Image (cartoon, rainbow, N blue to C red):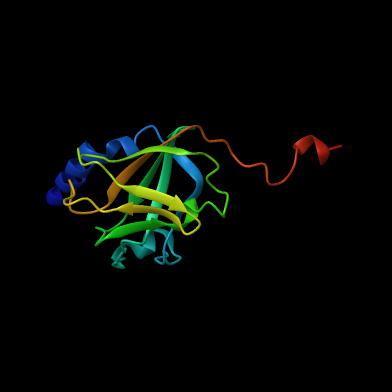
Amino acid sequence: MKDLLANMGEWLSVNGEAIYGTRPWTIFGEGPTRLPEGGHKIEKIKIAYTNTDIRFTKKSDKVIYAIVMDQPNDNTLIKSFSTEIGVLNSKIEEIELLGSKAKIQWKRDTTGLVISAPESFPTDYAHVYKITLEGYSENDIGGAVEDHVD
């Protein structure tokens, strides 16, 4: 238990910015791994996340965090940020890897946001990319509320 808490503290010292003071983003994440039903009863089940499992938090309308649940081998593809889907309706200004000074290379197109992996990672698991935007606003996909309320 002590090791678990120490490891968590070390991870939070690097990546806590993506946790503390954040809120959920429009979607919780993407990737193949799903948690089984059962609440606290799943504690004994080992869940193996992959480097295509990504979770999102946001700090403001200009900062989204993409938490890649396992170390990328090469590129990280965030399909939810595709220019065709429309979930992310803002221009990306910069991407940083928390805890790293490496310059992060990336491109965004119809397949999604492709982030090139740096040579090394600051932690052993769950790596966080800080994505700074020009300015984000929720999409009006359902029309004005006033149009539907009497």
